[in-house]
Image 1 (cartoon, rainbow, N blue to C red):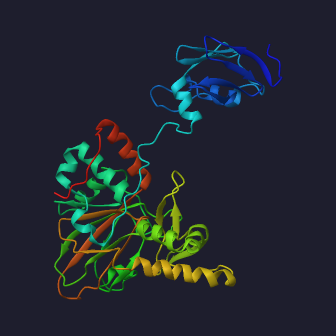
Image 2: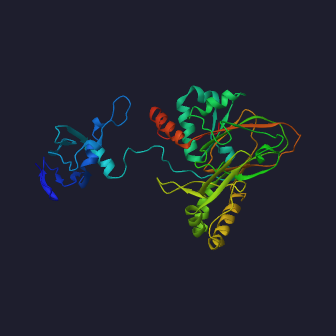
Image 3: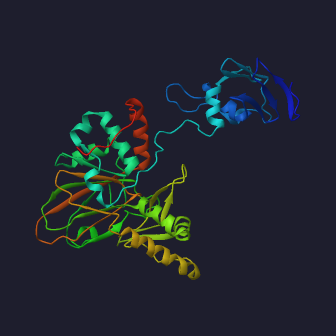
Length: 391
């Protein structure tokens, strides 16, 4: 039986050493002493997962309070551990090194965001919907463009509700919002939203009053023969990065202090708090924003804090409207603009009421589903490096 002193005994096969301690062991990996907790090791034996479902079936709660192995040694390229119950576990040293170094599984969906500016429209990634439907490798390219630039244009869309849904389902399940599973952007009587008028829409992200605002947005243009109504898009991460550089104290405030948003109708009262600027916990990059003056509630920060908050909020809002960032284009029938609703601020110029019909159908898919689909498809269809083309 093992004693409980801080250091008990060594196993030294060849030049590799394993040292058993009270709560864990150290093993020499690539010249470094790496420490691993006993419960973590037992919990992550390969046999802990069901081979068919890939779900964990091992119950760590059933183990004793003083779990310690009987023996542990390095053999060839693996750590071999024998547990008191007689079970033996094998851990590849490279696998252990990945966790010791903080790399874990690795995630190909964590990619550096590529900034873009006002002149981006000719260079925006474009994909044909029929080709996406028939070619999973092209879907991987599309999703990679979305991860890198946050926006892409789908062409040759079928003029049908089903065509939009099938395109969304290349990524994942259409997620509902308080607008339902889809919404139709066109002028109508008694509108409950400015989008359903011919008026201009200032730059915004959709639905920050929701606890988790929608992730990926699809806007499928079914018809657009009205005068005016150009689409306005801004890479808000580019703007936020500029704010961070020029006004670091404003950036700090907008990325750490949450403010209230609210959407109210006769039958809905949706509320949530969000920071104006989001930070990606994986790499510290700006990952998005929550910005909508239409849906901002009364800012309830202490009045002394508002002395600084409003200058920061106004400076960021003015930068979003700066022409150097603002991409303008006309969305045509048969096109679908797809964008990261957290990263991309979007709006619309006013169009002339009665000059023609303008109808966009929209819906959402979660950002997590996009990353999931990308991980699966890019592993199935690897490339050395995908280059965005505008053909």
